Image (cartoon, rainbow, N blue to C red; front, side, top):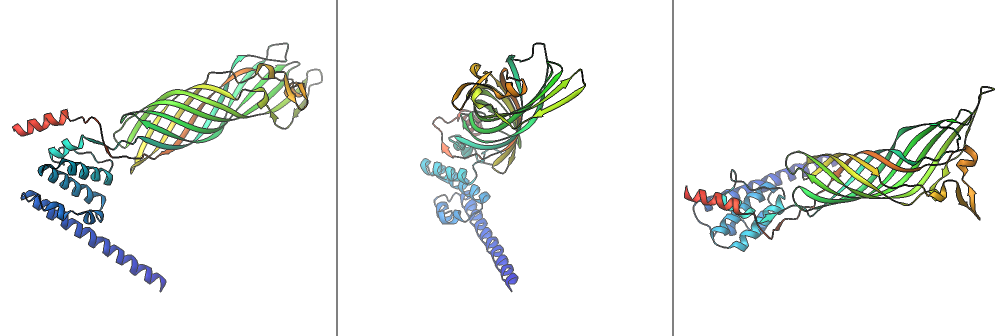
Length: 370
């Protein structure tokens, strides 16, 4: 019984929508016929507000296009402007062209833009980080071999683009990023090895200039700028392997994570460069992005290499030194991040201060001569 009721309601709604679409199509046919006959005065009484409100997006575009032409013929430019604005509200991505619109409507369209002033977006990414040594610090009296290995992290963030033109914009973001890398130090003392996993939590605030293609389904983009990087969390996992060359024995030693925050600067900076491609889905976009961040600042405090405040003792030796014979270098952090995201343009149909009508005016003049 319940399924039958739902089926009947569904059939009724489909029938009603179909009848409404047919009625709207009849009004558009009637209005178009009146326009072709030169009966302009009666067209606004056909395409009333209540009538256009019930139309589909495509039907509204046609209706407001007819109204715009009508008001231009009747020398009512304010009403023509208002009608074309309604057309753009119905379809913000509509572009008038001579192959489907009257030349006077094409001319009128140059007075308007729907370009979003601001475009928000969100992203998820996999960052891969590594360190660049500025000054090496070591507890070993002999040279050591140092290797680094990339480890995947995780990040998510939101951002906003301020669109200056259809292609150029200024962008900023707030990104929470969990990055880490592994460093292996071999040849310490009597052949000892150390494995260090440096785990960091960052808040990245990049500011960049972006260039984007504004046509087609696939739209490549690129950007460059700078970033403020806040190191809000820093911990290290250290594994020490003590080898005895005389006895051929190994004594691995590992402990819980060491909190390294007190030995590192909170505020850091980096250069940002990246690019990718957006794919259009309806009015919105999904995108894939590759970003490189080059660390410009040393993250290690000089006073925190060997000593760290612990409780009431302001000069306690760092745990990584006393337990693992290891200290951190003066270093900067670089990263490469692969991201995917979603872009939600906020369209704002409006008149522009200076309409670019010269090109269209020239075409209109040529058409008149012909």
